[in-house]
Amino acid sequence: MKKLIKNNLQEIRSSTNITQEELAQKVDVSIQTIQSIEKGKYKPSDSLALNIANSLNKEVSDIFS
Image: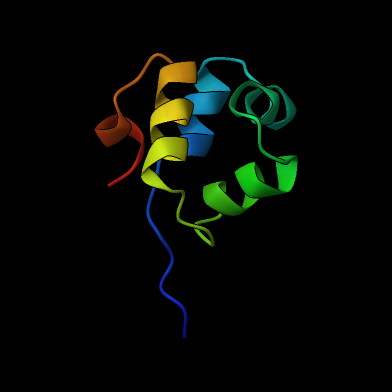
């Protein structure tokens, strides 16, 4: 059984009124990548995690545990 990766991306993204598509465009990945990260099925690289955090004006540790 695969371990899901815990994160708060969906909650934080929703609270900032940014769609999955908008975030995907900002960080230059597919919408499927954002969906997989939100579902905990995909662990982003350190650079992608940093880009996501910067796009949401958050710290990486606020989103990913």
